[in-house]
Each structure stands twice: as C-alpha cells, then as structure tokens.
Length: 475
Image (tube, rainbow, N blue to C red; front, side):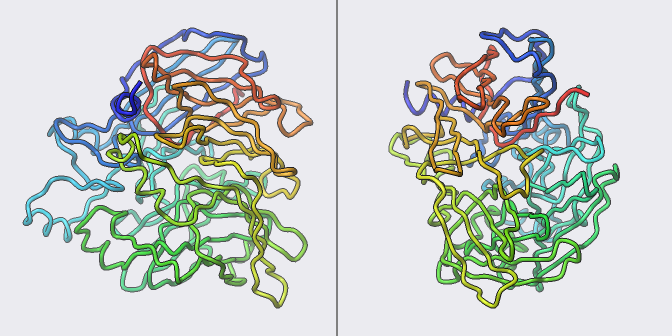
C-alpha cells in the first residue's frame, strides 16, 4: 500500500451511521461496560475544497458502547452553523487551525471587523455535571447527547467573542468540586487567564482564578495541575496579537518560533490563584502535559517534549501524503521546579527513549500523584508517514511495551481500569485503529498489563485520524 492510500483513508471522509452489533473477534472482559466517546474530523472535504491540516476538518462524534460482551457503534457530524453552512454552500465557511476560506480581498477586509469563529468543536470530550461537551480551541464548546450524539447547545470557558482561545484539556477534580481551564486573551494587552468552575454546576459558569499579562502569547494546547499548583508551560512559539486580530492568514501560521526566549513555566497557587514563581529553561515545544505533582518543596511536571515546533508543519496533509515525510518524535520529559526554594534552576530528566504522543494514563486514580507509573500513547514504528504503534511506558525504569501491526494506524489509547483493581495497569487500553490494507477501522482492546490484544470490533468503513476521547463506565 502506498502512503497516498493511507492518507486517502485517514484524511478522507467517514459516514454517519448506526451499527447495533459490531462484529467482535476475541473476548471482551466481562467487567468492561460503558461507552467510549471519541472526537475528531469526519471529513477533510467540502465540495471541491479541502482542508489543509490534520487539525482542520468538520467535527464528527463517535460512540462505541460495550455491554454484555457486545459492541454497538454510532457516528454523527457535530451539528452547528459550520456544518450547516458547509453543507448548504459546498464551501469551507470559517477559518480553522491552518485553513482559511477562499475569500475576495474585500471579504477578507470585512472579516476583520465581523469575525465569526468556527463551532466545529472536534478535539476532545469532557463531562461536567453529567453534561457532555465537544471541546475546541475556539471559545465555542458544543454540548451533546451521549446516546444520539445530537447537539444540545453551546457554552464557553470565557466570553464567546473574537480574541479568545482555550485549551482542550480542562482539569476536573470532582473530589474537590472544582475544575480549571486556560484561556488566552489576545489584544493590545494580552493575557493568560485560568478560569475556575464547579464540577457539579451544569451551567459550567466560570470565573477568573488567576491571570498573567503577556506581550506575545504562545500557542498552548494544555497546562498542568498538581494538588497545590497550576502551571502554564509557555513555549517560544509566539504571536504578535495584531496578526491574529487582522487574521490575514490561518490562525497557526501567525505564530513564530523564537528559541532565544527559552521556555517559561508560570506557577500559580491552586487555592488562591496567587502567582508563585516563573521559571525559565531551554527552548522546547509540547502539545500535551501528562501529569504534575508536588514533591516536598518541588513541583514536578511531566510532558511530551519536542526540540522545536516543527511537528505542527509535519501535520499538513500534503506533507503526510509525501512518502519522505518524517514525523519529529516527542519524548517524555520531567521538569522539576523548586517552587519553595530560593533557586530558580529547573532540572530536566528524560523518562524514556521512546517516541510518544497523545499520552493518557489512569487519571481517575493517579492524577496529581507522585507514584504514578504508566503512560500510554501512540508512537512511530516507521517514522515515515503517520503514527503506527501503541506504546506503554514504565516511568520507573524507562522501558516500553508496544503494539504494532503492519498497515495499521492506531489513535489515542484510552486506559480503562478494572473495578476494584489494585495494580495501576489492571485494565484495558481502547484505541480506534485504521486498517489500511482492508480500508476499514476497528476498536482494539489491549490488556493494559501485558499490552497484548484481547479483542477487536471491526467496522465496515474507515474512521478518520482523530485526536481524543473518553470512556464513561455504565452506572
């Protein structure tokens, strides 16, 4: 199979469908009952136009429900004005991460003063007070019904107008009835704003908890939270806010890599929002924090780091269609910040010599804990093309287990723990895998301990390369 064939399947289009009984090979654990909700693009084509980047496309929700050893499946494009206008006009209606609509010079000028943002919320999923949300980096988050996948309204982590971008990885701590998300406000005076909300509040009303002014905001996809602190990793991939306000090119193409700035960690007290300290270290880039925890007087931050931001350019679709395209490899790295001491020296440690992206772990039990041990993600077996293996990293000894099958491209591995477990990796890892050879996709169920296959549920069509999902156990 050619690289063009894998790209045609992974960056093409998935159908809207309902399948009551998906064919299952192997045996599903009898305790595994619940629903995997997954988000991502459902098509990269609108009429004769095409989105340019993996982070573009029209949002589609996927539901895999597991019960009694059987699997049912449904998929639906996320409803909203972006989907409606694309269907009606046959054209890309709104600017996305790296794609702008085709517009005349007059229309581009008018768009500066009448900015409308996409509601194609395709990046992640969360649940707040039993309200399910499809998450985007724009101000608009879309609520939906987890069974029918139909949209039920919109909310925002901040005022829903132009000049706001959010992360798609909010932190929820249900035991303390609080959650946080990070909003970047662009303007003459830009700032990072940490917004706080109650996890029991279905209105998801947020309030400013902490903020920091910044002249040139960075592109930030996630942030960190420990028991006592909130931390923003500010990479030197930054933008002049005026460029975004004028919006003469797609969003991400306004950012510039300035390594001489280094990377800065802005730390805040989680209880009060007070600024604790700012630390500086060598330049690097990351999409995803993994975990953060307090260790005595230190704050420890684990994330997937790259030498620079070139990974973003590698995700342009024309690059991924090129057989010579090589993905930069992210590595798990640990940063120790001495928040209570006089020193501002940051120590860095490589946790494993294995490429990793889309990291996940046992969040329900191990979030903010120092004894957290296992991280799951996707990696590269053959660096050409796209992510083609699942990875399990042991943070204690740096070793890794992998799952790889020729011509197969797995998405994010979601850990689901066995009820009553004692071992951290007692459970399964769920991943949606594109099978290039057959032109279909399947839900893969791996034993999290041995990292070997237990079962797979095969769909009759391909599911496009997506990003993030969540598993919700049946009550």
